[in-house]
Image 1 (tube, rainbow, N blue to C red):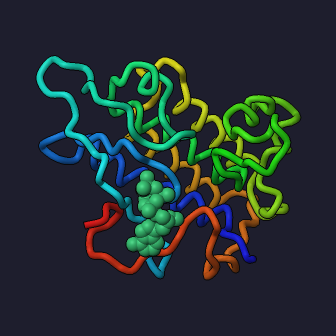
Image 2 (image 1 turned 45 degrees about the vertical axis):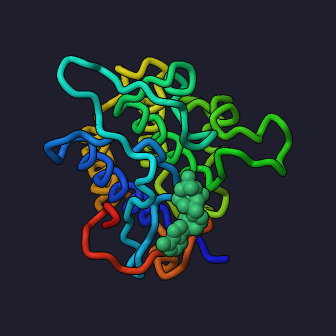
Length: 221
Ligand SMILES: Nc1ncnc2c1ncn2[C@@H]1O[C@H](COP(=O)(O)OP(=O)(O)OP(=O)(O)O)[C@@H](O)[C@H]1O
Ligand SMILES: [Mg+2]
């Protein structure tokens, strides 16, 4: 099956990030999405992403409160550790989930790969063995990208993912910062020595499913 090019993956995740940034800070009330994962990023016929499934979204904390307490729901593999442990929900938990999806687009793997050797089954545990500044890092990059990606941008993306996956929630970047970083990474692709495979654009990745066109950009109405 044809794959989504590296550039397209970055553009899709940028759109999804803009959707999250909008929910976090673009409205009068702050909204925590709570279930950010690749299957909730739907694509229209032009591969423009929309966030779907607002069933779990919550209004963020108001006044001096720093978090909302809830029963833990969401999806295994994407939920932030502090949320799983305490039920304390903040926008930083969405940032964690975003980091998980960044590793999905880098590796082409799902958060749980039941058919692989045990050490490779849990995505986040597996990628930890291939730190971004080590020589081994390139081994986790989706082999289906072959050499059709920019190694530099893959490293930048992994670094961004690592910042989203900081154990201390407050050390994670705001989604607006994440969006800026992704824009920069994509912009650098343009002038750089990349050979991203633009021909694969009309194809569909197993990571993301298509969705019919909707009017509102990035957030499903
Ligand atoms: N409107 C839609 N058009 C096309 N595909 C869709 C649509 N809604 C969902 N899907 C796809 O169908 C599959 C099931 O979606 P569904 O939302 O039921 O489960 P999920 O996203 O895996 O989990 P969750 O219930 O937590 O959102 C996913 O792969 C999703 O991307
Ligand atoms: Mg869904």
